[in-house]
Image (cartoon, rainbow, N blue to C red):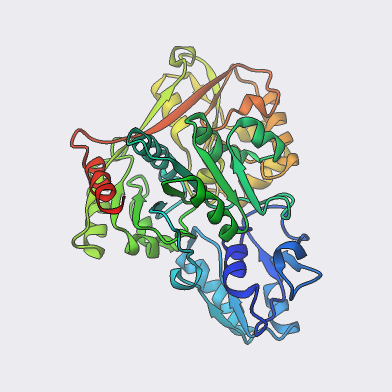
Length: 433
């Protein structure tokens, strides 16, 4: 059971070359237009010459019953604990065991040091921290490779091993908005980004190019590569979530350093609540308050204007946030009105709002599929507004033609004056290089 990421990795590492188990199907969730494809023979190995079907998760009960399934492997992330057990109940009722594969059996071992940046929820700021780390490591003269959690939503065979060094590479790979949100900021810093499906092959290439590897995690999953240092982010804008979702709580319990990020945007009470929860679970590791700084390219252009805010897609959808950095920035810049995009949303986007009813007056930058990208364009062009605030980390105007001015909101990771995280990284480098 997966979402075109962890499920494929678990299969590759644990089951692909195991003749003692027959994988009947992958089930797809979270990501549209994956169901109906096949995991291709080039990736599925010698025991699956026709590949493996990918079916909608709604078929789980029928699969268990009709195919006499012995075991269901749950393999996707950022879901409430309660939802995991609902899926377990379906599997058990169908006669199957329900299994979660852990780090021991799924993490790859690198030949160079690895720093992993993970989180308890989607949208905590992992990528900004990874970008900050890359700059710090480069200042030490180290060659870094960024390995990103997978997002293979297109031609799976072509996406087996991906290496990006330029925006042109993203164009050639026909990357989605979701991929560009993660890759573009790294490329702008001169980082080489690796991603794809076959992470053993990806790691073999990356470790030949780098002195140190940065794992840039996705959702709230744990790293596919065994880290020598695991930095885990929490979010005081969502206090309590650090122990409410899978596998975020497990990731937290594995942490070497915990960051309470966005401390500049949350209340003191919320920050303290997260601190106390983490300290109860991890009584001796460093817990550091850090900041997420939001800036607008031209804030003066927003004052007195009617605007629509486009936010980072995954943060707002399965990340569970009603709004993000763009909404905060537009409010601080004194926009006259933040217009609800539902007034102008195309039917394809209305499907997203129905699926995620918690979303506030913002437009998630969904673009897993060309039809979603077109729907985003239609909605923005139909809107009765004066300006678009784009808080997606990718350049939206390079992907769709928008007939209104765009002001970009950007956010970056900032340490406090004590620079405690920097000191821990310095210690790590002395011990591992």
